[in-house]
Amino acid sequence: MSTTDLSKYDQGSVPDAGKMRFGIVVAEFNSDITSSLLSGTLTTLKKHGASDKNIVVKHVPGSFELTLGAQFLAEYDDLDAVICLGCVIQGETPHFTYICQGVTYGITKLNLEYNIPFIFGVLTTLTHEQALERAGGKLGNKGDEAAVTAIRMAALQREME
Ligand code: DLZ
Image (cartoon, rainbow, N blue to C red; front, side, top):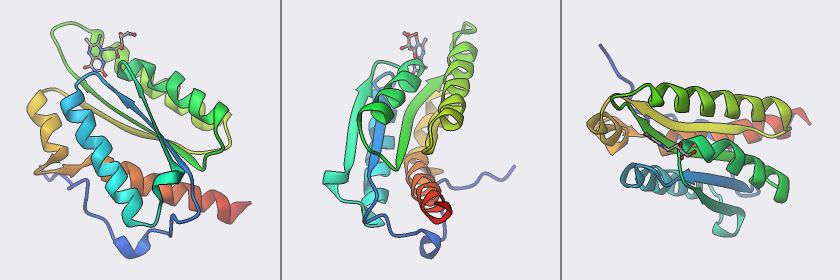
C-alpha cells in the first residue's frame, strides 16, 4: 500500500499568505503529537509569507472541543481561515469513534455555516506510532498539509469575492 508523505507538495503552487490572517485551535490531548502538528503548521504558514502578528493560536482540552474553539475564533476575530489540530488514537472502547464523528461533523458544519474555511488537521490513527509517523515522522507532518490547505482555500475565497 502506498502512503503519501503529508509534507510533500508543490511549493510553487501555494499562494502568498502575506496578507492573510489565520486562527489555529489545538487540542491538548495527545499533546506530544499535537505540539508537533502545531509546529509544522506555523513553520509552513510562515514559509509562505504569513507573519506572527497574523496568526492567533488557542488551545482546547481535546479534539471534541475543536469545533467550539474554532467557532469562538471565527466569531471573535477577523480571520481568513481557521486550522483545527488534534489527534485521536483508538483505544479499547468506542469512544474513538464518537470523538472522530463529533469533530468531523462539527468542522464540516462550520465550513458550511461560516464564510471562511475551517481546516481538518486531525489525525485519527489506530496507534500512537502511526500518529508519530504523521506528526513530523517518516510520513511527514499533517500540520504542513493543514497550513497549505488553509492558504489555498483562503486564496480561493479571495479570488471568488
Ligand atoms: C476522552 C478522550 C479520549 C479517550 N481520547 C481522546 C483522543 O484520543 N484524542 C483527543 O483529542 N481527545 C480524546 N479525549 C478527550 C475528548 O476529546 C474530550 O476532550 C472529552 O471527551 C471532554 O469533552
